[in-house]
Structures are given as C-alpha cells and as structure tokens.
Image (cartoon, rainbow, N blue to C red; front, side, top):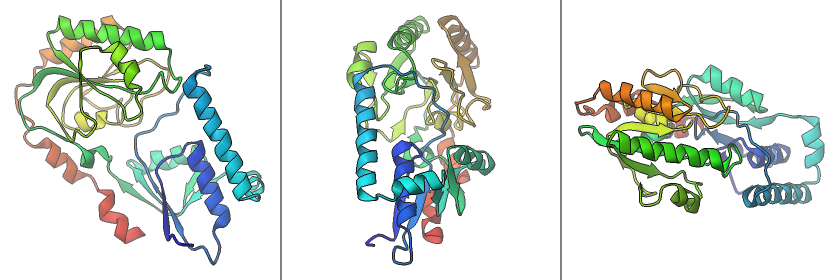
Length: 293
C-alpha cells in the first residue's frame, strides 16, 4: 500500500512470478500500477541442461523464490492455474511495436497500455567522434554461464578471434557482459585489454564482434560493421540481422572473409556526430514517464 508504481524490467521466471503475485494483490485498497520497461532486444534462448554450479544456484534460487511466494500468498497457486497470463498496466517496449507486442504475448505477458521507446543503449552510451581506430571490440555474452553453449565452443571461438586480430593487425579489446564470469574471460583473453564497467563512451572501432548482443544496435546505427558469430541455434534479435552493416559468421574461415570484406570498404571519415543524430531519432522513456504514470 506504500507504493503507487512497481517497475519490472524482464520477463524471466522470477519476473513473471512477481507480476502474477502483484496481479492477485490488486484491489480497491491497493491501487498501484505495474510498469514494465524492456531492457534489450530479446531472442528465444535455447539452453542446454548441464549440471554446473551456476545451474544449481539458479535452480535453487528459483525454487526458494517460488516457495517464499506461496508462503506469502497462499492464493497464488490458484491464480497461477486460473490464468496463465501476466498483466502489466503500462509497458515501455521497443520498436516495431507489432513485433514486440507479439513476442511478449508469446511469453504470456499482456499490456493494458504501452508506449514505444528507443533502445536504452542510445541514451546510456555514445561513440567518440574520431577516425576509426585499428581495433576490434568483442562484446562478450554469458552463453556458457547460461548453459547456452559448450565451454569448448566458446574457447575455440576466442582462439580464432585472437588469431584473426593478429592476422589483420588489429588490436583486440573486450567488453565484459554485466553478468560475465571474469575468471572465465581471463582464461580466454589473458593479457588483453578489458573495458571498464563504468565506460560510457566507446572508441570508433573498425569492427565489432559479438553473438547476439543488443548493444550491437548502437554500433550498427552509427554505421560501424558488426559481425555476429553464431555459437548457438538462437535467432538474432529483430533489427540486428537485417541491418546493412550486419554480418554473420560461424567459423574462422567465414570470419576471415568478412574481415577482408569490411576492411576493403575502409571507413576513413569521422562519425560526424552520428551518435547525437541517432539519439534524436529515438524516443526516450524519460520523455514519457510523467505522461503515462
């Protein structure tokens, strides 16, 4: 009863449990609104069930969270069985809205009202207005930590990437994912430079390489080539695969061919403040907070 608005920024198991629990608590006395903010360009994950410390910890957390929820609200199970959908009062979702409304509906989330917003990374980060540096930036992801690919596949990729950076005389830098196992990354990229966690401005890299990171959209929209290296059978999130500066590869040979193709189209100009222009084209969530809630 102390809160007027409760924010959710994900659609995972715990998020859905929270929303369902909140749905059951809403009445004339509890007039709070549930607000959802999309935080990335999602794709349907394909996990491999493997017994690991991460998997066991996550399973234990989910189970304990579910038990605590039932103890807190015994009616929760009945509501869970009664209606499979989770209802959100207002959702701030990415564009195009038709795609993301359908995507969230498929994961059993229904928005009573919604507003389109731009990718959050356009407001969180910028790219330096400078000539392209002879560098590659690897946007790491938690594919192994989340049991979405095998350790050996990730290791082979990192070895190939280091070989190609040396072959094409491009320095390689690493941006860890917020949930990355740093010890695991250090095993792959010992003596390579890791970007700081609090970095807000990127250099103008010649090539970006990742797997299906939403952050790639920031570079694509600034006409910086991004290579999506496939380590899983997951589809690329909407907006990444179709972009004219998007490339795909799944082995060293194909990646080498893409490197040559990109470097032959040498970018020898500055960004001309494209980062600023891109930001103006997208609607910020902050512009709409007061209007909708």
